[in-house]
Image (cartoon, rainbow, N blue to C red; front, side):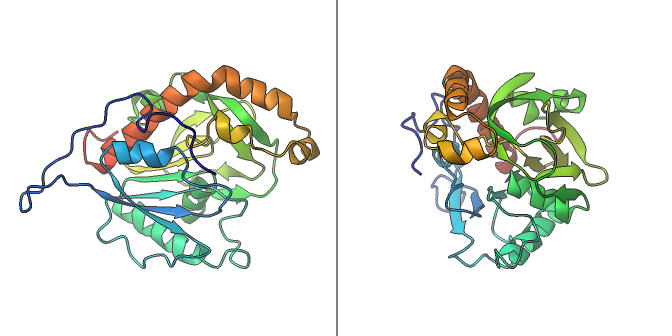
Length: 264
């Protein structure tokens, strides 16, 4: 799916780049982006992060070999997909992705795990992820920032309650020991967490906007007891504020990649 026709930076000014001391050219920190499903691509995160001065190395797990190490990368993004973190029979690249997630945690490398990506971080970190557990969530959902999130650089980019897209049945049921619990929703308590200072997992989808929601399959939603018309209406009502918040969230993550800002 192509990203919606928004300004590449969502209306915000791109951040200035540092200059490489040797070449005099702008330095663009390199970020590895693991795409776990063609149905859950990088979408609007790509133009947003590019506008923030990052260089993205996109790898589709089913087609592109993943690097063995994160050497040379300033950040890691792992996207969603209809998988469990250890379904290696369905997704043979997952062992390599888990190894990269473990390296990121150990190095406290700026990392953003979205949906499955966040579940991989929780799984590798010693938490628990369960398949088709509890209430599923689809469409724009109220994400509530918790007390620990009030001082967190990424959580602060969102409003105290922000409507952001959800699309999941599986969920994190226990966070890793020592994780900072940053946000929840009414139906799913573990919506956002942080490991160390720079490793973040989220259940919601900041990369997904109303243009993508309109392309969802109405019959498939009905099988899960969801109304396509209601989901689209909620998306249209929430889109402006949600997009601004998600753009700010992407900018806050990019700042961590660039090494800016105090540790949480």
